[in-house]
Image 1 (cartoon, each protein chain N blue to C red):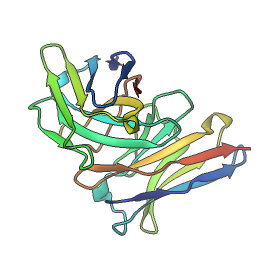
Image 2: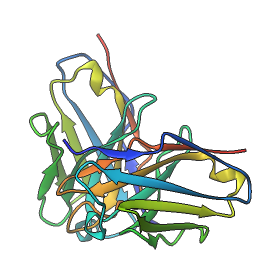
Image 3: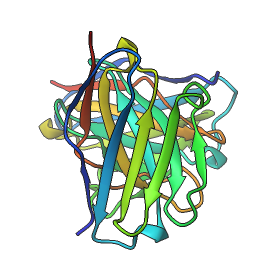
Image 4: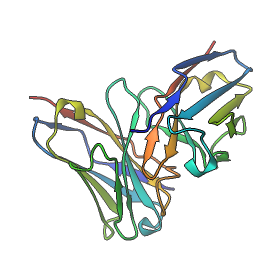
Length: 108
Length: 120
């Protein structure tokens, strides 16, 4: 059973920059895992942010960027806004797919 | 605009089955796939599986493959997810999402979710 690990929680100041990561129990994450990132606010459905490691959807603000960093998938938020406070999930493809446990991002 | 509209909340007894529907509009159903995801109360997201809107090919999560069946009806642009032998652990919000036609690599538009409660 593949496990995908994210930081449980992070805190960032408004206007700051924060990087969330997504690691696989199978080893280094590569582009072949097609990393996706999603944002979810309480009581809402998830919203897709990033697909294929670094591609933004048409609705994704430019302050969200995806990359590979040190063997992990990464989501960087630059110029964080108060409305970015949410839970963030990554998804990796292994033939099937597995979500990470989520990172609760607090903007304080 | 792309929309995925799911069926309403369900309450089921342990051992029963539930079938959730996901009706899509705003795009050609057979050009994409549908991925199903669930979220237990206060928990994270769980990938359940993927079904092609083109030919009905499926890819289920190993943990659920004995109890889940995903189907499509191209005439109504609707996808279905049936889960059998329900237990309290299946209490969750179930989501459908439009996905890449080849495999589950790009879930973009999501349905509003369907709450399934399993209780005696």
